Length: 384
Image 1 (tube, rainbow, N blue to C red):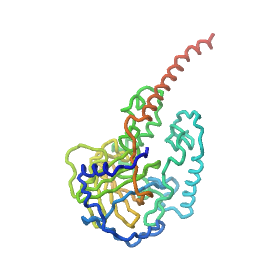
Image 2 (image 1 turned 90 degrees about the vertical axis):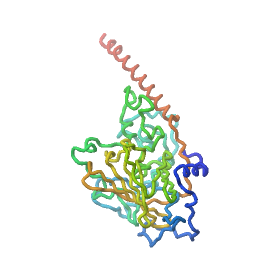
Image 3 (image 1 turned 30 degrees about the vertical axis):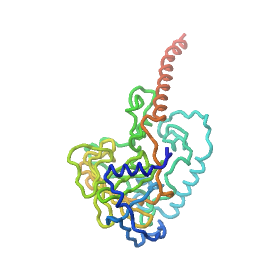
Image 4 (image 1 turned 30 degrees about the horizontal axis):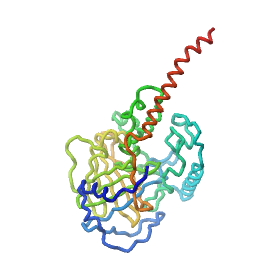
C-alpha cells in the first residue's frame, strides 16, 4: 500500500487549506548534533527555534516498538526490563523475522479460524489468512526506552494497565475490543452482521481511519506496519500526519474547543506551547474512537517535547470523571524515520480486499446452505 511518495505539491495544498503558513517552517542553519544513545539518560538539550519562535518539533517520526501498550502478565509493578530481558526480546524479534520470511505455499488453502486457534503465520496477518510474511510487518526491532530506561509498557500506571472503570459506568459494562478483533470473532457463514455488506465492516478495513490507535489520541503503534508520522508547524496550527490510512489531525494553537456536539474523527484538538513543550488537548471524541470504553466525556492531553536532536518525548494523560476516579496515562519516545520521508498510504474504500471479503462470505454462506439442505437427506437414508 505504500506506493508513491507523498507529493510536495499535494502536501502544500493540504497545508494551505488547513491554514498552515509554509513561510514559518524553516529553521536557521545549525551544525548536526550527535545521535542520541537511547540507552543513556537524556543529554542537556535545547530545541532549535523556528523563525516564528516555536521550538522545532518538525520531521518524520516513528513509534514502532516491541514494548506493549499494556504490561504483560507476570511483571507486576516493574516499570523497566533488565538488559538481559531486553536482549532476549530483541533477539526473539530477529528470529521471528527470519522464520516468518521464509517462502510460503501460495496454493495452501488456509481457511478461517476463530481467535485463539491461529498459527503464527495467520496471527501475523490478523488471524483470518496466512498470507503475510514477516518482512511485511514493522512492529519495531527494539524495546521502547524513556530517558534510557527500557520500559515494560507504554502505560505508566502502577500495574502498567488501564485502571478498572467505575462500577455502573458505560465503560464498565463493555470490554472494548478493536474493530478487527470483533470481526474475527464472527462467523461469515451466518447471514447478517458485519459480513452482510460493506457499510457494516470496520472503518480500518474500509480505509476510512486506521484500525489501530495510530492517529489517536492517544497515539500508539499498531504492532503491524506504517507506524510513521510527520509533524508540520505554523504560527497558528500544528498538523500531525499519520501514515496509517493517511490520517491528518489539525491542532489549532491558542484556540478554544468547539461548543457544539459535533464529533469529528480524532476529536477536536487545540494546543499551546509551555516552554519547549507542545501541549495538545482533545475532546469531542466520537464513539467509534472510544478508548478503554470512554468517549463522551473523554479528554486526552498530549505533550510533545524534543529531548534530543533525534528524540521526541511523547506523554499522554487520559481523563473521564464518569469512568475513572483519577487521570492516568503513559509515555514513550518518537525516533526519526530512517529515510526521512513518508509514503502515501494508497488505501481507498471499496478496494479489492473488501470485495474479496464480502464475496468470500457469500461463497461460505452458499456452502453452509447446501450442507444444511443435504443433511436431512443423508439422515433419511441412514434410517432406511
